[in-house]
Image (cartoon, rainbow, N blue to C red; front, side, top):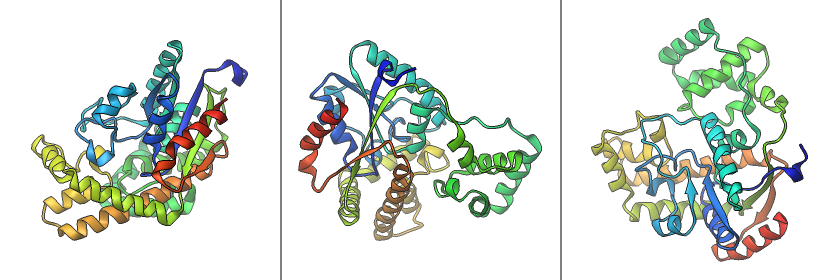
Length: 310
């Protein structure tokens, strides 16, 4: 189908702390829109300060999707997000509104816009062997193995992504091809006319924004939020909480690290996370990058994005 006949969606990407939420809201205030959060952690209830969710007032101003929808002990996959997100996009366009997808989880965005390569079915013997090795040798060893056969896929994973590491190795050992190559070869008719824009900052400025965000989170009561999660029975055994910020806070509350070390690690690990996000998005040639130098520029960038959208 020709792109001109497909629903148009706006996709706003960029690293953490780059201002995606602010830009999406600025655009949504100008034209009838609804915002779809493509952040793999904002979908969870109770994870508010640590995921930089829109404020209560912002949520009232513009309808948001995939914010506070499921409990932290429920696994929500990129595949599920893609299927449910496409349903909601059609509901939004049926109302004559523009769907604005905003977030930094690259796999969620790929799933939504392009669909995911499903790969070969589960190979029981290989899967069981990899799961046993994960248990006995640890995720770091398997991730190092994945780097040897599929450095592109491994660059997008952390040791906490055990399920994805096992799946990537399984696909390689079954097909003889890296899962990243399968993804590149995966082609289908487009779901949407997707217009991609990205927010780009100078590295030092972005890193300072990240540092300031961590300090603002802590000042806003982030540790109380984490204590509240513990009181509800949630901790970093849940995949949703094996997340930058939360994992360091849990370590502090267990007296494993000092407060200053927690703050240092939160900043450092968030900067590393932002670098991985940029590595992912820079490979997507569909993205039109808009350079930002200060937060006050967002209204002007919003106007330029709307011109580009036309």
